[in-house]
Length: 229
Image (tube, rainbow, N blue to C red):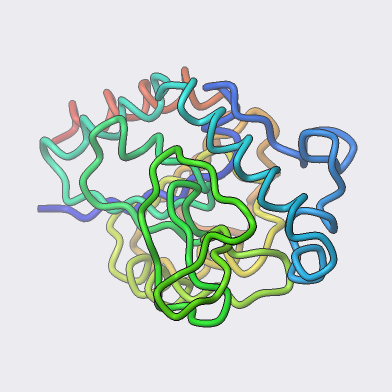
């Protein structure tokens, strides 16, 4: 069974109504990224950070997977599919995909602020100051903030190294280290980039650019791949 690795970015979730700060003025729901997505912001104002992610979690309960998320699940009928996502939502899970690696964490989880290995599923619940783990430390969002290490990046690179087909969806390919994953694909790997603002990739072998939104481009590609196999 051929292996398909899918790398998804903010563009796939934007069509479900989840806002991405990179689309406009560098603000995320009217907050500076430094305020709500850095360790410094957490140390300076943990109440604001918790409130921000509580609101994101609540929003997540009000959105649903779009046609792109659903189409990726269909690929599992004939392919070994692994999704690597930069997104912190759980829309791939909601759509029924089986194998998902979150590079930047997950909104529906929190972790200890002193022990990165103490991670808890909380669903859409709010977390407040005073909510602590069993070791007594404050709980924080299980999100990889700017300036923090991306612990799953090496796992992701090993997945891409074994891909027969690599599909990149809704990402600008400018945020590292995730943007570098493309270069781990083997030479024989077929590559597809789906994004209405996709850059020219003439220096990459065996790549097809699909300048469409995820909601239309992904279902078309999935149908093509299923028909080929």
